[in-house]
Image (tube, rainbow, N blue to C red; front, top):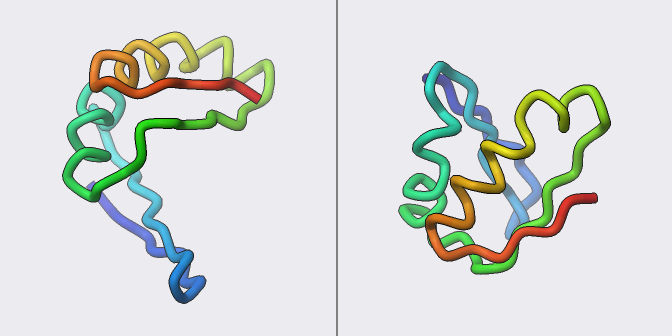
Length: 68
């Protein structure tokens, strides 16, 4: 797994790239103190492939998810 940090000062955030990231997404966000409300920004192609799995994983970790 690789991590790239987008450096924006106080608004910096990591981008994680790797295999089997989605099933562990909720716990990974818990580890970094991610908030309860989450917005997923996607397009129809990527959304059709991954959005349902991401929503399910985030909901299982107690997050409220909006898709944009």
